[in-house]
Image (cartoon, rainbow, N blue to C red; front, side):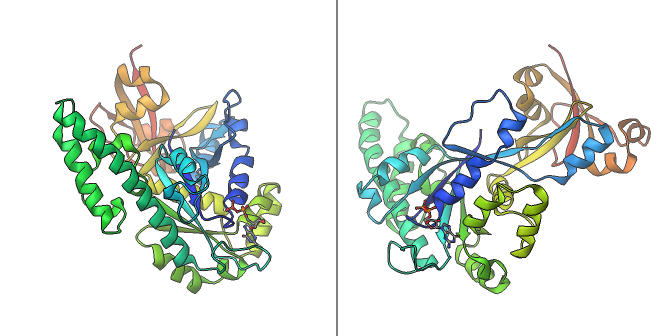
Length: 356
Ligand code: GDP
């Protein structure tokens, strides 16, 4: 599954946010036989189309796409040098597909800030520097190994060349994501600054309801995306029924919970999209990458669907909703039969035909 790792300085609200994420019961409801790891938090991707689809098909249930969050890495200045547990925590997020950095924006004199002041820009700088240093360390070790292996003709020279270029880039103080180096040969290293980044500003109500302050913070991290939430409120929302939750959100000037926002932004940052399947049993969203073909998409349901793929009947969500039923969509000529080269579009409603 695609996962997002959480990083941030101590006392910025990582655990509070993560608790809200892990208290989410979506997995338990939708996948009764799945084992949930204690260090994984799962959020539904909000998708109003599923409810509408379920009405058309009289589906018994709805299964949304999900985004998983794994592990928290608390980073202090010097973490890359192995101070505290920094290094070990960093090792856990190497496998993540993207990184969400929690940044403290709330004022609370009772809660100590590690550097003695609330300074989002300074905090991000500290974290990003530590991540760059951690990557440099990873590369140093790898380069020593790569040099031996290239000499022994056990490794393509391009791997070593890429590693050297990456080291040089990081020496200039920039994250790898800002470089144009093709990092594919270094995938096994799980370089942290090569991953897409999301910034989560943990703020109080004053900021949540103030568009100008949010814009100013978002500008600090652009073109990366920013999410604004109040981790304390998120942990309260999770325990409320939908009506009370909506009321609490509204009172803090939000239309959507922070966790929902985080799921959407995470999904987007990872370059993902969904297609839909529907029937009397369930209306369901399936996660695929942008640009995937129909057989690849079928493989997400079952590998046999991909191997035995024959064709797909595709109706766009908008056409289906307008027609009101599959039969009517067909008679209007809105149901397309697509072959193995078809590139999936977000919101395609699909039925696959395959050989077993
Ligand atoms: P971590 O060290 O980053 O995991 O931070 P924690 O989640 O443990 O939070 C540190 C302290 O800040 C705890 O006492 C939280 O209750 C508090 N805290 C977290 N988020 C907020 C917030 O949005 N507002 C306020 N006032 N306190 C918060």
